[in-house]
Length: 337
Image 1: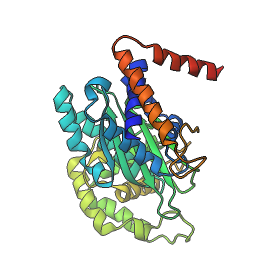
Image 2 (image 1 turned 45 degrees about the horizontal axis):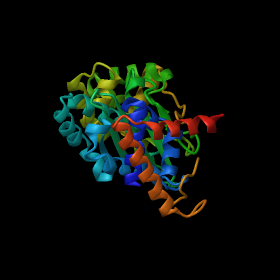
Image 3 (image 1 turned 135 degrees about the vertical axis):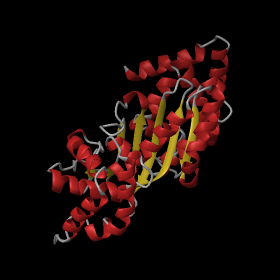
């Protein structure tokens, strides 16, 4: 899978360029089909971690040819993303901190500003020497073990906290979602930032008032469990001292997580009349079989033949002979017709 991922990426970059490759990664349907071509079962959440892992391993050392750099990964590997970005950016004269900020904000949005019940555990960051980037990250729902994948593309992000996603891939929509990056949450974002700049004692009084409410069990916010005034006090002191100018600056603060954002969103609705959006933002083919044997076991001989054909096509194209890649394009045109 690592070798085929490398060969396919090289072919795509030669034909379309690295920026188009990032656009493909940000397309959840293309990404899923890419995983199927690599031989991974389409219906498994593992396709995200496997495809990203195969790309990171396969493209390591080829960056001079592909202009594609990969950082991050699953679990502990995701936490190394900032250091990997700084190191790679330094080698090509890019501003590593801007990439680190994009990585951190995309993760923060999907873990705190979009509260859909999925815990982020995978974060892969792809970028080019021109500074364009794409993010593919995934969260897991503990209750039913379902997964949701979040796609980001730098050219489609005009505002980190207002409709920033290229796509969100999910098995279905959920009702109990707090979506503070929805366009209709603009008032709630502004109110939350304003509250974060106020004296902590005043905000704590608002929280105490919320805790006095008797809510039915069916209410999707369990205030006594999800909002803890004692822990909130420390964060409110930090936000008051930082005086964040807007919601993005608030979200970027260290220590401001899902529970803090949820508390501020509740207060924004009660004290300022600015409710957050509850709209869920979420909206194959087989070439070599699948590792689970469906629709048939991976044909290793044919798989290796594909890799060799693509390697040869890439090698010829680099020498100025693009006959094989042109043949692949003609085949795609014929199939489309």
